[in-house]
Length: 284
Length: 320
Image (cartoon, rainbow over all chains, first blue to last red; front, side, top):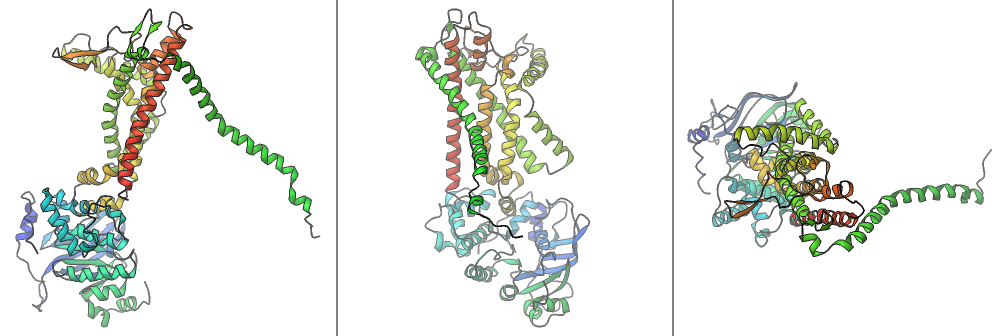
């Protein structure tokens, strides 16, 4: 994996963020655990008068997969979108508490949202490739960030498509429309497009909910590969998927973060009754 | 008592008359506009066709406006339309982008949107009077007094005629731009933003390329509307007769359209030939010929633009 690109000079706060030594959770006794990279501290999110998330504390560890589960409307997607500030444009939204990445509050006024989103990439529920060629889809991000040499772009595109396990299927038709790909291929293309800007953290919002089981299996396999290099936070409605792909699982219910722990512990012996009832399918 | 349906009841002969009458009537109503168009175009084609010749298209009027051609009118119409679209397109697209991408749903935006829609319903003669009051007397006169040029911009001329027309077609462009932008899926904007694009980068790289065809439709409609209008330019720049084309030599060499000059124009020419001529009966062939040229030019402009639109659609279609 290549070195992360050096950030632009004007993004002082974020280069500071990069330089900051990583730290472990306070009072953490188990030193073998990976470092915390994203941490929500007492986070509440309001849509107008409605509270979508109430006082959530959640730490996401580096190079691991964290699954957010819970019934519809429980706040898990809102939480996910809080991490790259995709919620900002919703009228009447309000945040309380903190979200820190490498210990830096991303809701601080001096944060450059555009740079934040380069570090925290996102894959959406419905595959949304641009009506451009496969090449141009993947090259979109790098071009935005100033890469213009054809050769350099070609390298990034090939590398990203390979990492997204799509290269072999599309290498002969890079100039063809992305819209001609199958649903599963389109979603992997969206993942490649996200990888092309070399993020540290990838947010996935139910990335398989519009796909058939075979395409889903491919994406899950891909997530397993990607966590070697990236930190992944995934929202899913599928309990088996959460159990299969994630290292950590957070259960949300009615805006509250009920429980967060290692996935095997959540699925084998959850601490809360609500969690157990949800994962065994008694509600939700 | 149980009613029995007989074979006679099932044939419903009496109602058939009413049905076929109504069907025939609505078919006739549908055919009428088509018939009107065919009659009108047919008449113009027949009568106008007799007049059209290379001389008619390339010469100036002569012999007390009873002879010669209409070249200055063709030139004037082309130039004023081009000038109009150059002014209206950036303004209208900009306003459309603002309304869809930036404005949100506030009170002020609703008022602006209502104003735009109402602007589309204002009679065109009102635009003409507005052009005189605002562009010529206010802006033109102010420019003259600031630039110390004497009476140059403070009188009817091409630039104000084009400006007046551009206000007239602005609502068409704004509304079609809005529609085109709204048709671009929100998910594409989100994908772009999530890759670290700024709002403007997203609009420029993702939204506008997809909206091109729709925006062009607005441009097409506005060109056909603007090129055929008489009332807005009646007071703002048209001339009955000009001995020279409204052209100046820039630095004495490069010929350039003089926006501060009056101009002759096709639709206005038809109007003056029919109402102000020494002998309106004698000018009838000229009127027909001019009308044919005006209609053909509008069609030609339309077809060019439709061609562009098909091209863009296909380009995008191959990407869908």
